[in-house]
Length: 448
Image (cartoon, rainbow, N blue to C red; front, side, top):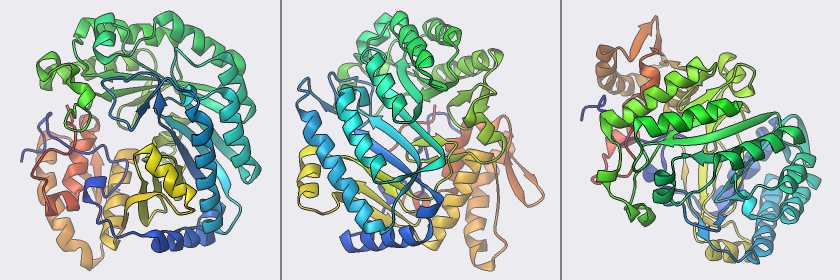
């Protein structure tokens, strides 16, 4: 396999090991024990809390997230109650009062939920927790349904960051992906957020969508740059129709692929840098004053199941259907189907679908990949027991040195400026579990 190919299938490495390689050696009792250990050792540092709110009123065909499509807002109250029951399970298992350093509301569409229901959920969680002095609360909002009341309610609860999913302004692209919002709607909601007091606004954009051209993408990017969001996430479209049948609304022939898709990214990166943004890890750009970029420059940037974050916590608790929790030495994912998730929570048990206990080797490789993704460098351990593993990894890295993507500085492996655009490829070179059992079928999106 040529690891330098632009269309190679590779993980985004929000975790290691990645989900397809979990051993599923976790059960209720082991998970409770891991949480108890976390409560005794790392919960005092502050925890990250992710809350998955899966509901959307319409299906965005490009989306690979776990969603539930409905216009019936009566589902909100029952789901909020389930989240609070699950939170109670975690509080009991931790055995200590949680210190919340980070909260992120993701989805789905968190702003599908009425402000009063979000307030009920978050007020209950906050009243049973201590808020860390350096807290960071954020949420994802749809530009078309994020109301001033949403912004005001969440602001009063401590939220200071908001991310709006824009993706593309071209009408033909919007029709293909069934995602509609105008420039005027985005400008209005961003203006309202800033007037409310939000310190950081992120805009999500996607390249590689059906019918995108260099001209149409450039038009979208220039419009977004004029709005001057503090952060921009410029994601590669993940075409996985075998997992998400909604993506079959269009076919591969409608997509910009390989070199064409890569040119879209390079064009976007050039436009962002000219506009004063700086490169932050993979897919992300930020203004010099933003916390994410400051964390990157101070080498405090972190990456977890929520993506890049300025908050470095070892304990991530995730509530809701399909969400994934992390005690650093164990991962646990919830059941994906909402009704089954709620049934388990009502029974008073963790709604686990599967999980993984990290081995000593997993933790070592995880640290290397995390260093590469967040700090663009890593250093091999000198312990004798790892040298055979390192020899295998080094053999795979040879091609990256020849391409100028990596270079050695003493004992440290460094990602070059050229290599920063290929972090997923480089990460795959370190991924021991992938190479120990190479998938027979494609399980990841391509890196191009």
